[in-house]
Length: 455
Ligand SMILES: Cc1ncc(COP(=O)(O)O)c(C=O)c1O
Image 1 (cartoon, rainbow, N blue to C red):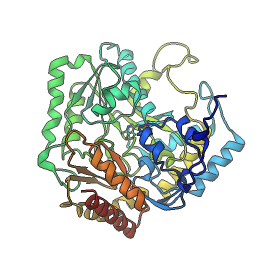
Image 2: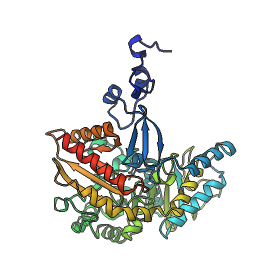
Image 3: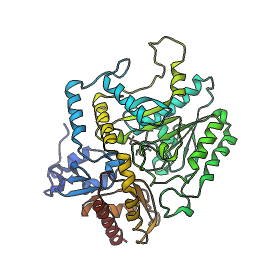
Image 4: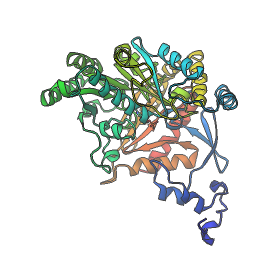
């Protein structure tokens, strides 16, 4: 065992350290975090219920992002906790390869029923990133089975976020997430749909559908015979709620169909109600060939993702020659369709339907929009964008430091009792759909004070 230096072993008396030592904290290398800053001034969360967290120093903290856009039906749902506990007792683990358990089949069928017609076959993963990489591999393998192995090129979009695995990083378009890793998977990108003309738009911007035509340019460059798939989020979330202009996704669908290119909607964040409809595909009335899901699928209570494929894609795999005992798609994870995650998923889907979560998000959305846009005019607010129960406030950058101002605001909010996601030049809001009007008011008031005080 490594010796613990005397000074590092001393526990800070401050309650926010929850009795942990600095040494212990340094053992934990946190994801997507400023580890050095955190270790000086930790923000430890010890419990959650409804729209609130409790911090280690005993404060109630309003959760303005449903965790990371995932605990959207509210924290601490007892039905989900009980389902996970029951499964842990009855079936802790079951091999996902060549065997199945009923929970996996039932959840797949539930997801099939909930997703748009035509998306009929559900492949489970453990995260959004795995869903994306699974979908990209599925698209390439599909074309190979169709006798067109040269269709391999993948097209994403600037400012898109598709998780952090090799494929997702490559088709993703947030430079800070890409620049450290060299070349991974060959990919091209459409332009972001963030246009200066649309600043402070409420909901879907009217202008910008023409940006979908860029796909024609990429087809002219590479030829459609070399392109496997286009992947976009119906609404870019992690880059700061970039809402597609009216008609944009329809046009993209038309172009993909015309050129025999698969269209993948990454609905990891938008799936199950976030934008005031069950899916982006539903809201925009555009059905992709493949949809990726995660987050709300278990209400964040267990790691799980899913890829939902069209009948045509699924049947292409199933109609191959060869013995039935050989995998048609040699891909999957030890924890695909994990029994605990399936139990959480079934309980979460039950809540989603019974409590009409998408409608609930749609009902609160106009009030949320009105209050969030009330922050316009505060110092350094450069843009506000929203759709359903998602919103972002873009801040003017300090010279050379675009991420600093959102961080300063978020830290001020944390001191005052609210967790806010800061990423790039934006503050992001995506509260649980069970949020009440007064809590929306509190959220916006806290933000207004923090933005004003840090100006
Ligand atoms: C659209 C989208 N795709 C993929 C991911 C990655 O999901 P995960 O963090 O579960 O790997 C995210 C996460 O925010 C996302 O928003």
